[in-house]
Length: 495
Ligand code: NDP
Picture 1: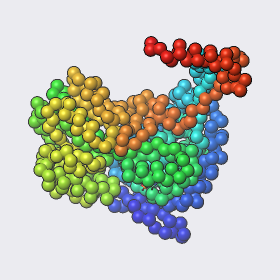
Picture 2: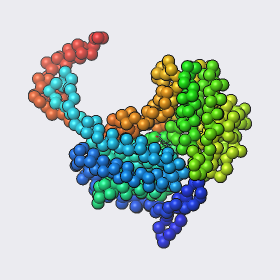
Picture 3: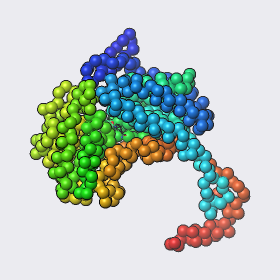
Picture 4: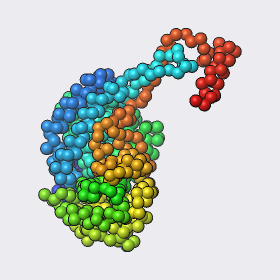
């Protein structure tokens, strides 16, 4: 990405990471531009929020159909801007559409007004709860899954009745513009979804623009800056940050399936996946067999252009991180049984499998974001769980085991765990997705993902005049005595 000045308007050029060719030029929106977009979104918010859930679902269905019909073109833009193979781009779009459909069609049942019961002391009250939109939600997204990841916030924020101002990564602005153009065809003339383009400063301006909430997905370091900016105006934030996910292989696991999952989980999207497998812990009894299977299958993979299964590393600066992690691993006694630093050429990193890497090495503790795996022998699954949970991150995990998969999964500190399948929990529309610790907080997807973009609104109506007038200066000694008695009966005895 390079920034140019063109007749007083700053622009950014987007380059295809595989070829270096410029594939798009977009404005660098200033704080003034961002404020104007948020003002337009505020005006549109009352119209969008006033629609009922069914009308909003119809609009979102039209948008879904636009994306579906244009998916070949959208996949091309994704591939040109960040380098992933077209077939992977199409798979990403398919997954995003599943969540969009679920959000649109379930918002009413999750967020709509419902009655809840009062307690004995508050029996005179008829109670309802509903989930109201914030108004305008700002979404800040990364480049690695430029459709799936931002739509995880945008679809749910829109279905909940918010309008959205979206700041895509400076590496994938064209994808963001494509999505907003498709929305404008589905819902013409009203700026329900707008895109602002630019670099980090444009995102920072969105944090300060007075939106009702920021849905941020990106690195943990940027997440901290976003939180600091949002703290100035007490703007609530959703933090979907980085990870260092592990895959655990028990002694009785289906080793071929586990190796296949480790390979896809670690190498697809050139390893640039928040939920990607970066560490593998294997029971000592099956370790040698597993490594052999993994390396054998990995030999068929190649990073390159055209028919290669693995695309380029999108951000030039990420190559330095990958190089450092590989160098640290080798310097501390690790071995590359496949690939290695010598096989990095231009923006392409060949699949690399490391063994014997100490647990305190950067290749094990930090997010690498490249097609690399560390594979570590463990005495048993207790040992594996302890190592997994030692990470500051807690985004996701994968467990391969026949008998004890559920017990192992239950002990892992992560927002989601998939047993005998890689990343399945992120693809099921009814399940929440998010992390703990350095991986962030808040959830996208499922009912939690809808509620994330709302505030809970409680309402009561007095049904009859209570004999126990609790909140009145007219409360007398008799009421106090009855309350006293009720408190002893209701709360003073163990059941
Ligand atoms: P970054 O943190 O570099 O950027 C994320 C977004 O924040 C971009 O749009 C970026 O804009 C913007 N930004 C940068 N600086 C600021 C700022 N000061 N204020 C507001 N916004 C700012 O992440 P990447 O784009 O490199 O994405 C990769 C990271 O995202 C990885 O750590 C990955 O694990 C994580 N991720 C997490 C997911 C999850 O679900 N938990 C899913 C996908 C990715 P610009 O690009 O223009 O600088």
